[in-house]
Length: 250
Image 1 (cartoon, rainbow, N blue to C red):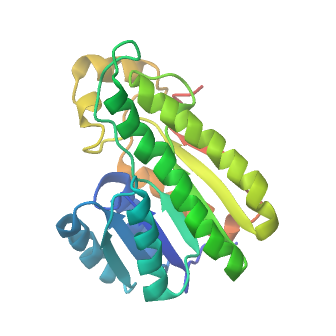
Image 2: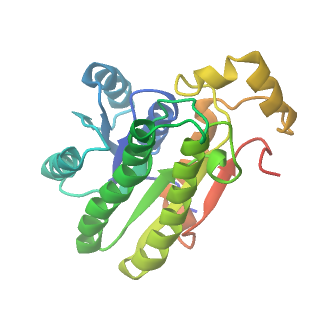
């Protein structure tokens, strides 16, 4: 079983903190060279410094993964630096509104869908085209248990459910090109992104009452599955959604 990523190049979005930061460090520790992206370059550079301490190379790129022109530029920057992209981790996501589906407006809907679904889809498409030329690759989408079972964040749940289906469709259509596409679905995880949920005693109590392990996850607990899907240890796995949720979805 080969869990090494030596000589592999990973592009990961939303890598300046939380699950993205933890995954980037874990992939570097497995031997990969990294290209990390998010909107705020100073935050990225701090993560890049930690990655370089592992002995891996790291390119930090400021990019909004929900904007088509910036997606194209991001891919070209990585190819110019490394010449290939072996693994893509679509981790960037947003949820700017707590509004219910009865009350959400078009602006909130578009902001969520543009990054969580449209951006992830078109970045995957752009990277898959380069992977096809190079003989294959792996794409890992960070979805959510909110995409498996309805959550308090209604439009966010819809966006992640759509990304789960996109994962399956891409896996089916790109398998002939030796491109494997899978997803991990975190449960409630203690990141700044989900702070409004796990720091709210009422919401936390409800979430934990549905979670057999009765605690939120730490970002580092997502890393093992991501590394597994990135390596050849998962060579016959595609189109799958791995829920890392302390039992929430059961």
